[in-house]
Length: 144
Image 1 (tube, rainbow, N blue to C red):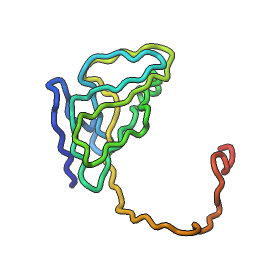
Image 2: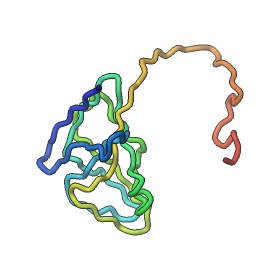
Image 3: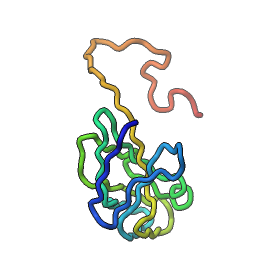
């Protein structure tokens, strides 16, 4: 089992929490009340820091319920937490909806997934191997 250490930086912070056994993500909560106006974005404090294990990264993802109900998402989806970072986890939220949305301290605003990172050696080559797709870019595989 991999351990995820965390520290409460603010007495209003909440530990990351899996809501159900087997959930992939740990819910992250805001540590203060705030409002996010339609079209605005904000770095939301959580009051916690995490120690992502070496060889892993933390991916901060939106919560589907907030997205479906209010159009709230994470601006830089997924947000990336490197294993060497020890500062406060702040969630970069955006309101894609048409109405302002108010949050209270303790509300779940995002989720954290810890994912392994393979050890990859970069190799410079003169030419890449051929594939069926080749250099086809955006939309090159069809409409759906």
